[in-house]
Structures are given as structure tokens and as C-alpha cells.
Image 1 (spheres, rainbow, N blue to C red):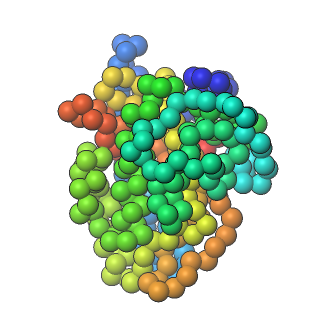
Image 2 (image 1 turned 45 degrees about the horizontal axis):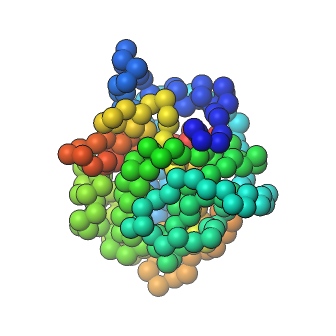
Image 3 (image 1 turned 90 degrees about the vertical axis):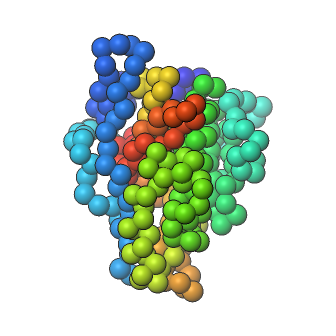
Length: 263
């Protein structure tokens, strides 16, 4: 966090173990992760599970954060900060699980949101504020997430042009998982909502690469077509994505489900 919140020494230690820097202070070696895709469900309300751990072994001693959905915090009135472009979603006053001032957008009417915090949350150390230079990176990550969730809740395929636009591999790592869900008669549901809270890992950003951490809030699941999702409280889930600039545009290179994204 650059604008209003500073990372603690413990948080820095944990996240630095996720990436390796080159000798040049201006260059970054992108974190190497396997793309981890939620497994196709075996029951009508199962929460998507992850596959084997990523190739990079990560150890951390950071304690789990308090559930941000349980302790309310009033946003600071009049506070401002970096914002997404007008093309990204509908600006709304708040989103599920959000207790800080910031730029909040509704991405899907079914309940997909993204939040850029402008202040810290004393009850949740996974909330970080961006700097203006982070916005193109975070917007590309958010558009990639939107492409995934739109397919997750509708087509269950990666044929939409947004996958090619925002993923290096055009999102094809999701193909097998989506196919399994289709064959089983399942469809994705956002349940009580999904709220993305991404930020850029400042110490591992260069002109052509960056690392995005996202401790997002979710109640998503796969459900049998025609059935209602089992609604419940929002839980935290972690995602780490390496971003690369290709032909002047940011794209997701590797993305993985990782608990270390939540402090």
C-alpha cells in the first residue's frame, strides 16, 4: 500500500517469499505459478475446490485475518483516491463485506463487485490502497476476472473475446474445468456475492510485469442447473496473479488460488 496504509514487516516477509527479484532494482522476475482451476463439483452446492499446490513452495506464518464481514467500519466521509475508468462497471456506494471508503463497481448484476480501498481497515490487514500507477494493472486483472465470472455463471466456456484480450493463454486453462461442469449439468452461482479487493505488490512491479494479490470475499458455488444455491456468509479466498504487459496492454499470465494472498 502506497497512499494511506503501510505494509507491516510481517506482511512484507510473507509476500516477498512469493517472488524472486533480479539484481536490477527496476526489473522483476514474474512469480511462477501453475494456473489452479476450481474442480468441477460432485454435489449440487459444493464450493469449487482447488487442485494441487502451485510449483513454487510458499511458507508463511501470517495469522488469518479477522472476518471483514463481521465487524462494521464507517468509511471516512469525503476521502478520495485512485479510481477505475468509467468503462469498468457501475459505480456503487458499497458492496458485500466492504467497510472502507473507496471506488466500488458492480461488474455483474448477479452480485460481482470490485473495490479499491482508499483507507485501511483495522479489522482486516488484507485491505491495501492503490497508487494511480496501479490502476491499468488492476483494471486488466478485474476485466479478466469479469470474463471468468461471466462464463462461470452462463456459458461455461472460454469462447468470449475477453479471454483472449485479458489472458496470455486466452483462458484455456479453464476449459477442462468448465467442460466437467457442463457434462455434470452444473452452473456457477455467485450466491450472496463476490467482492474482489485486488492490489499490486509494490516491491515486485516493473514496466512490463507485476504481481496482483486479491483476498476477495465470496459465497460462490457450482449448483445443478435449475436449482438454487445454498446461501451463506461471505468467506475470504486468496488469488495471486502475475501480470505482463503485452503489446502495450496488461494481461493475466499466471493465476492461482493461494491462501497467502489473505493476511
